[in-house]
Length: 300
Figure 1 (cartoon, rainbow, N blue to C red):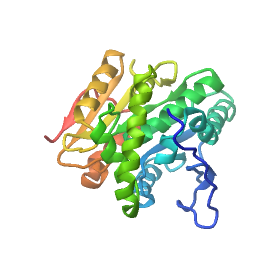
Figure 2: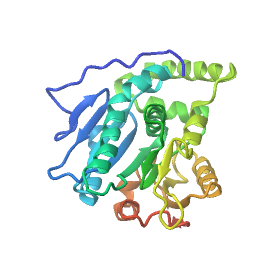
Figure 3: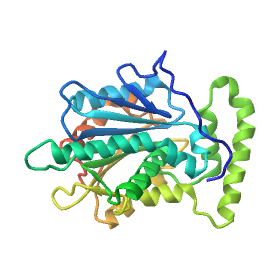
Figure 4: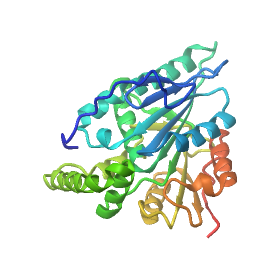
């Protein structure tokens, strides 16, 4: 993207945002349970400006479903999202090392090497961008795609839509900075559109393409198909449901086993709060290898 800002932050060791997690880098955290299973890893890429109290709900959910898995949390904010790709790739490096370590542990912890058990769970385009940078950095350094048991996409991935993107970015700011921030966001989006007009690839298009790119990720194909689960709603005001549906359709065309869980009347990245039972069941199916039902599950 454009060089609007740099993403320089200093880890805060005095008041950790997520108790029990080690702060390993810029907006990057790692939880390691006692007696962790070698090679088991849940990667959570949170949405733009997500507050810790909301992220913690998803952390708790994964800890209950996969109690012996490590959890890698990658947060997203405007400073990171608006930074040039070179800074984003530098910021994602600690996460890359965790993933590489999980892959190595799975290959060396047993007499007979086993594939790692890695689940990627992203939220909105902020999380999809974090996942994209992670996948591209891994492909460059490891020179092989990230092995996954499944991919979960909450409220994403969206195409670039000016006012929806503006709303999401402004909403991610603190209430005291939203009024002046709205003008800054307009400037950032104008620069983005100018950057695209110069012939550069639309970042949203890059995300949507990378998340289904066989050279970037290599899902564990159970019963002959890779597993992906989309969790979204028609009432989401920041991500148009049609964008998610189209991506799910493209996934089917590429041979993925797709599950779509549509929620009724839920807001952006708020589906767990509205129907925890259905959300939990979707995560359990994916972790246990039963996800990607090939159908749309909806209450609409």
